[in-house]
Image (cartoon, rainbow, N blue to C red; front, side, top):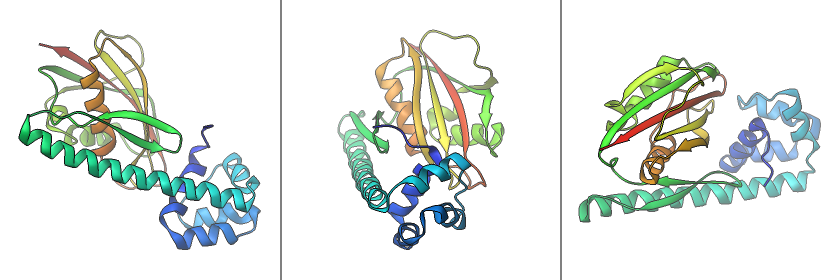
Amino acid sequence: MTRLPAGVERVLDKAAEDSAFRDALTSAEAASRADVARAASIKLTPSEATVLAAAPVEDLRRMIDEVAKTQERRRALVRLALGTAAVGTVAAGTVGVCTFLFRPGYIVSAGVRHDLPPGRLAGCLLSDDLTGPRSAQEILDVLRSAAPELASADWVLGTGTGSAPNYAEYRVTVGTDGAVHDLEHVRDQHLDRDVRNFLCFVLQARSSYRPADGETQFTVRFVFEPR
């Protein structure tokens, strides 16, 4: 599926969750849809407003319905993963891997282990591509609080240069509501699958940010040294 602009995705997400907003959006004149979004605190760029206005109303309703279905699948998978995690922790101390849907057409494997394999974890927030209203310190505070393993990790601010063995990078998009709207696995090198899965799960399901006036995007690199 071709990815829609981020602002349009936020509008569809809102319409899938809020029937009053959906009715206002689909009943408005095409050129006024951006105004409906703005009234709901969703600011669109001129190009995003053009894309939203160009959609025939029936196509718009269909896309909203598809997003609603995806959101319900996501909630069901989260419930399943959390239930599996609870059972796995009691029965065996570890659990398996579940698949989470973060946006329509985008699938990423997310681990539901309750801890990491034995080893040393370090994190680096790449300050050279941090955009949006949230500060580097706020992001680091949220990451540290997302899981005990991240709280005890060594954290630094860095740049996108250089690399290390046993690492993975993730591009994170945090919406105005403080939720992680997009999580992209950018690259990795020789990193254990269980570690990658755990990091995906923690970054998406356990990270909660304050609401803000705009979207925040950042890249975080994790380095894991197994024992």
